[in-house]
Image 1 (tube, helix red, strand yellow):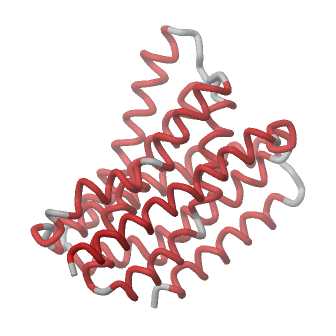
Image 2 (spheres, rainbow, N blue to C red):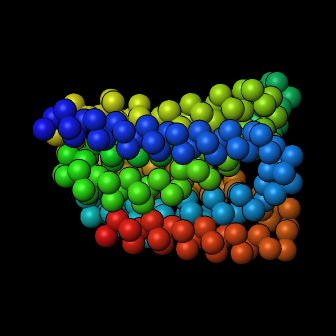
Length: 244
């Protein structure tokens, strides 16, 4: 039983990694097209990340941990302070003021992707069927995460090769890494602890969407970006509904 469950959860997490990697490879190959339409990718990703946080991750974390609002605020403030630190010290020192545009979303998405791996461990330990349903739902948002992470890193001043590597490490390989680290100890992760992690993740994702993605979208002021935002929200609703 252990072998079958472990094989299934690792397969699911590596498939998620593959989907994200395909997103990175595709956008790297069609980079000029991606750069031209980056505002639509950012708007779509903002819709997915913010909507999933508010309609699923936050309510779930509140059910699991009474202190979840504190962790939600902590996740939001942690990325805000990290962003301030980058802008005041790192970016200023290297005259790369836009670096935070890529690094902060990369950290937020990376933490969320790592937590996805933990969630795979939990759901597959409930049952393989439950894990498959969760994997289908979560897999839908992996592709745009890879694309947006790469594009924002490049927009922040990172060279193409580094943008690919960092996007892969943060958005792709972090998911199976989360599964590997958590699988053997999953029975020792209490519900309040998982609720705290979910709240931290939601706070980070809301910050990334509201403070980095949407302002960039508004700055570009593309006429149809609101449509991609709505599509992102609808995809988030589908992800949530597919888990129920």
